[in-house]
Amino acid sequence: MSAPVRRFASVDALRGLTVAAMLLVNTPGDWGHVYAPLLHADWHGCTPTDLVFPFFLFVVGVSIALGIVPRVERGDDLRALQRDAILRGLRIVALGLALHVVAWWALDAAHYRPWGVLQRIGLCVLVAAPLAMRTSPRAQWALVLAILLGYWAALAPGGYARFDNLADRVDTALFAPLLYVFEPATGRGHDPEGLLSTVPAIATVLLGVRAGDWLRRGQVRRLCAAGVAMLALGALWSLAVPVNKALWTPSYVLWTGGWAALALAALHVLVDRRGWPAVGRVFGVNAIAAYAGSALIVYGLVAVGVWGALYRHGFAWMAPHVGPRLPSLLFALAFVALWWAIVRVMDRRGWHLKI
Image (cartoon, rainbow, N blue to C red; front, side, top):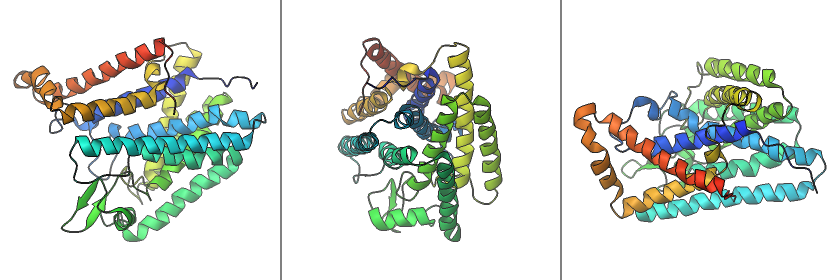
């Protein structure tokens, strides 16, 4: 039997804090009254909320480096490991598609939307995990560079305007009207998790793979240096191509990857080396359960008309006294706290949902 792979509490903590942040920004009491840092940038730019999804994909890459690559190095069956990774990616995609079926029904949406967060995660696992198993670090860096330069070359001629950029035009041509935004009158559409913009998201995962390898080997200084270098390169590249989450531009990949690397390094030092509590760990070991389960709860409560009532009667009464944004935030925090209690109970009983 193979020796167990070392588990870093800091990685579970970072994954968990990211999932908690996802729940926080996805469930305000009133979408019309949200503090600016808890909203995505309208188009170009990067708010704290725009760091959440790339942080999660970065941690996916870290987990591949910590959980799969060591097994390859010690001679475990490569085909079996690759098959397991591909099947896991497909299961994540299938879960995302199933959740959108529920959302289509519960939210009475105009059309079914095939793209989404879990779908992107699954597709990235499908591609990045086999690459991490079969390629050298140098080849992975070359792939990251090729992806970013190639994507830049593809987008640049058409520009980066909403609807008119190449990614939106490809998604509209292939999937309209089944997109996050579609204008029947103009025939224009946009999906922030569409097909073409998923390609640079794979680069984010590969950056996480490299970071995870440094973490496994105790090369924290290299991890920090890489984080600073990515921030600098991202800022420099943004002079030519804007930082844009919806398009997952090359500058956005480097900018968010830099912050993710520094966050990982900081948590490793504080949690793994200095023994600080791994805040967020219970979310991290049940990330799929928290994300998918919370989505189902929201869809169900919206479908029966309870979601809005909970906010109106439980929180909105504060608005005349403290303004409308604070009650909206407190509602989201209460929802996160509820799920913290759920995953904490699951963790204590040893219930860790894996797909």
